[in-house]
Amino acid sequence: MYEKTFPNKRFQNTLSFLQKHIATEESILDLGVSNPFSEIMTREGYSVENTSGEDLDVEFSSVQNSNAEVVTAFEIFEHLIAPFNVLREIKANKLVASIPMRLWFSPAYQSKTDPWDRHYHEFEDWQFDWLLEKAGWTIKDTAKWTNPVKKIGVRPLLRSFTPRYYIVYAERKSK
Image (cartoon, helix red, strand yellow):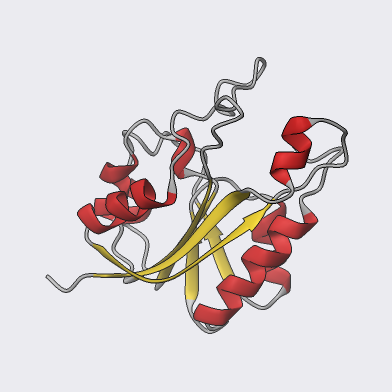
């Protein structure tokens, strides 16, 4: 997936945000298969368990059966048709999730070769906040950052100052 373009800035911003809110003693269920960032979390001292690639739109057993204290979801919810459903099923009381934001000057991402690597949603920050709140989460902290690219053109220029990633720390509302 990252053969030619390792997202160093995104990973560093994500790690800093995670470290700000989650102690290494807290166990993590990371939504999505094992990936370079879950390996980074493990190297940084976190105890990380990943889901196994099941379709989280329809199969919730991994979140229902997990005893993890925290769920992380880094660039996962945009791939789901109905992220509300899995968000409601999470047992953990803490959530750290990031999404690529919808950019008005760029269409939603769609891989031509991998049907799992497509964005059904690209949220604006308020839409993602609303989704989380409606699914039973209280947002405690957020951050955004840009994703400049080393190309010439109008879109690359816009990417240098338009936030592309949005990350949220949320806690489960008491029932």
